[in-house]
Image (cartoon, rainbow, N blue to C red; front, side):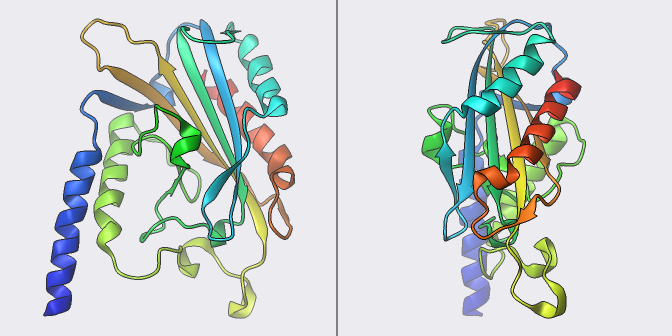
Length: 239
């Protein structure tokens, strides 16, 4: 009985927290809904790995090599890089390399949040997270609904680490190998239009690479090539 009461209280607190986290002035949409003309943009490209606890940590801020892939690909589509705001668009790219079997993705293993400080002043839990695997194609409202549902489901009991059934195991139940994978998050924020639109509108897409390699620690360079390919593919298909 006490356990049921505890879970009920925890569920209520989670629902309240989810409501408090929603920003009514923020509209999050899938990148497939973007469809706007090219223009000037600012760019930030951060690269992350996982610490010993499975939490993402910033490894390289504004990675020069990855920035090069972004700027060259977008230049072919008519976009012009600006050194600083204001610009028509702000583009954020967040790239992660790690052993996802060891990543701390919450109670239900539904998402992996970015470090708040690394995302900067515009951080939002509605935007700044990677998924365990490839994101399903969906509308912006569907994506947000899935995220809200995951927020509510965090009342589940158990470890915050993803279960072996979710993320996979090595054969015969042995300790998972250090199989490195990459995660990609691209966030595009147009400048406010001032025409009654939400105070902040963002377009988001996420991707996961195939297994990169088996390497202790999964340093960023282990996933670099796979991340480059996945990132360029996103930019070519979505922009």
